[in-house]
Length: 430
Image (cartoon, rainbow, N blue to C red):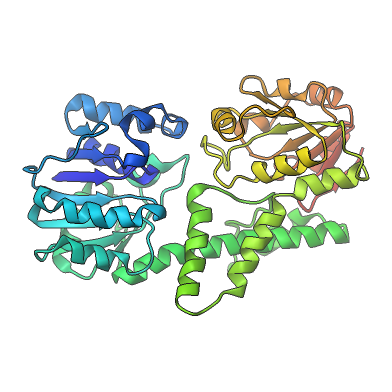
C-alpha cells in the first residue's frame, strides 16, 4: 500500500520503519516541531533498539522516503492510508494537515489516527477528510525501549472502527504483524480512544497504590516485598505493576494521565481518585530525598550524593517528567552536590539543565560517580547497575548509605557489605 505517516513521535517513527520493512511504500512526513534532521540527531531515536537501523534499511531499499525540512507530500501520490501519530499539543495541526492533504489521498483512503487526542477527535478528523473517506482510531500502545518489538510482534491492536471496509483496509495494512494469533480488538472509535486513556489511568493507580503501601510498610517496619508477593499471588490482582518505586515519568504515560483528567473535567465529572494518583506520584519522586534527610537528620549542606540513572525508565534516553528532575531540585535546595551517571540520558540532562555548579555528569563507568560521595541513589534500574562491584562500592561511599529507588537489590546482601540499605518499603542495616 501507499502510506503517508505524519508526525515526529515514537509511534510515527516506528510505524514508518515497520510498514516499509514489510513492503509498503511509505512516505514519512515529520512534524515541523522536529524535522528529519532534528530526528536523525536526536538521542531517543538513536537509542531506541533497532529503530534507526530499520529506518536506514527502508530508505536503502527504496520502500521509505523521509521528507526533509520544507518538503511536503506529493499531490499526485494518491496515498491509500494516512497514518497520524502526533502529540496531544499538535491537535490543531492535525486538523489542518488532514484538510490540506485531500489532494494527496486516494478516493477510498483511510485515516489511521494513532495519536492520543481527546475522545471524539477521530470523528472530527473524519469530517475534515471529506468525500466519504473513513477514519479509524488505533491506540498507541508502544513502550519506549521496546517499540519495534511491540509493533512487529503485538500482543493486540486496539482498533476503534465504525466501518467494515475501513477495518478490512487496516487489517491488510497490518497483516504481516497479525500472523501468530488474532490480535485485533475492535470497538467503536470513541470507546477505543477512552480505553487507551483508561489503561494508563489504571496502571498509574496500581503503581501509586503500591507506593502508598510501601510507605505504610516503612512506618510499620514491614518488608514490602512480602506484601507485594502476597498481593500478586491473588489471581484477582496479579503481579503486573505492583513494584513500588520512586515515581513514574515519561512523555506518554504522564501526558495520558493529564489527558484523562482533562476528559473527566470536560465531561463535568471531576475525578478525586485521579487527582490523588497524580499527587501521590509527585510526592514519591522526593522519596529518596526524604530518606537521605532522615538518615542525616536534616544536615545535608555540603554533602555529595551519587545518582545512578536519570532516564524515566531503562532503554530510553528521555527524561520527560522523570523522577530525577524533582530529586535534583530537592537536593540542590539543600546545597547537596550531585555526581550523576546514566548510559543514555546525559545529553538530555545537559540540554535541560545546562551547566549547574552542583552537578557533574558521567556516561562511562558508573563507578566514576561514586568518588567522594556520601551516599548512592539508584533511580533508574539499568541492567548495568544490578550487580556492582560491592567491595569497591562500599569503600567508595563515605556515608555507607545506599538508597534503592527501584528495590532491585537484596537488603540483607547490601547490609552484609557493611552498608545501610534504604529501599521503597524495605530497609536493612549492617
